[in-house]
Amino acid sequence: MKKEENLKRGLKNRHIQLIAIGGAIGTGLFLGAGKSIHLAGPSIMLNYTLIGIMLFFMMRALGEMLMYKPTSGSFTYFAESFIGPWAGFITGWTYWFCWIVTGMAEITAVGLYVKYWFPSIPQWLTALAAVLILLLINMSAVKAFGEIEFWFALIKIITIFALIVVGIALIVMGYESHGTQASFSNLVNHGGFFPNGLTGFFLAFQMALFAFAGVELVGVTAGEAQDPEKTLPSAINNIPARILLFYIGSLIVLMSIYPWDKIDPNSSPFVSVFKLIGIPAASGIINFVVLTSAMSSCNSGLFSTGRMLYTLANEGKAPKKLGSLNKKQVPAAALIVSTFFLSFGVLLNYLLPEKVFTLVTSIATICFIWIWGIILVSHLRFRKLKPEEAKKSSFKMPLSPLINWIVLAFFAFVIVVLGFAADTRIALFITPVWFVIIIIAYMITKRRTEKRAG
Image 1: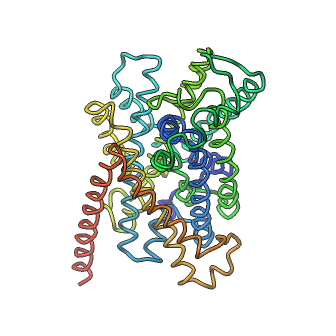
Image 2: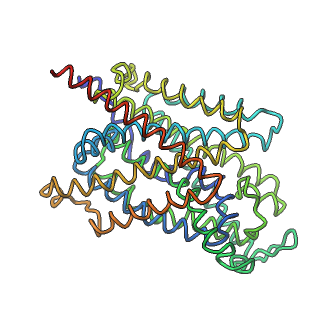
């Protein structure tokens, strides 16, 4: 490939850091937390903590390999290099599928948030508008994407900080609303820390895990980062602190202000809490924030799918035309194709407006587990096949290889849990269809390649 056809390294340190934060705070927290809290009660904080620990180790595994080779579409490259061509093909296409499905969840969330102000506007129409706006953003230079994502993420951070500060003030003052006083004792006074027992605790893992979808996005930006050796380790190492502050901190405050059993599982608890304590203006502001959060996540998803299709095309795993760049060094053809498939989410919002969110998040959760699992297996193979490079690494994954197997076992456990709830069980039947399709596609592609070589 000619030099001018390469993706431009236009993402600065501040872009990478905020993209990493934005990837760790998404609709799964802002909207999905309502369902998670309904299932697990205050013990949802333990769900997020466990998942956060597991994904931190997964990201350290990815980080170690990125120090070896910082490349865009990193999962495909590492899977193919250290596991085999089949793993690279399936992983690349599955990551594309992950973000298409996640994007469907995000545009669904956008439709739900807009209904807060304009209940008469159809959910599918808002979803369509969101898709078209984000396509225009992504067709600009990568620096424009970085700037948009920077400000989207900054809005999330400022909001959660404000929520925590205001919440603590209300708790200290003993603010009372709707017969309930704001207090940390609300975390245990309404059925205890595990009000729905271990069953509710386990069932909450699906939505809680989906909340972290996008945490691996740092790996996709590696090919367009200006100084990956410096920015990537910093972004990855800050993940635990972000999880403690943004997830655990905000949930403690939310459930202390208003008891978990009063929170509506079908709406954003962030909006609900401010509405219930009698601050309508604040609830409108929070609704705007969670709207930008959904747009941010979908924006990241479109970025990821475009880059992944571009990488797959240049590796001979997708049509050649998808491996071209426009004058702004953006994979325009790949972005347009991804947007076309993302638009099926608009159709789902028209046909199944009430069920689409849980359905697509369940499917996305299984696919992201595949991606994260492949990263861990690739890391094990990297250590085995490149022992000298692994020894030299300045960013080693701690406790490997034992921790790799522990995290893989945890992911397997979450997939088993999906089978216990009727609304997530359907994903266990739908998602394998995707893997069957992509395995057949790999076999056809392999046969064609062998014929050309022969």
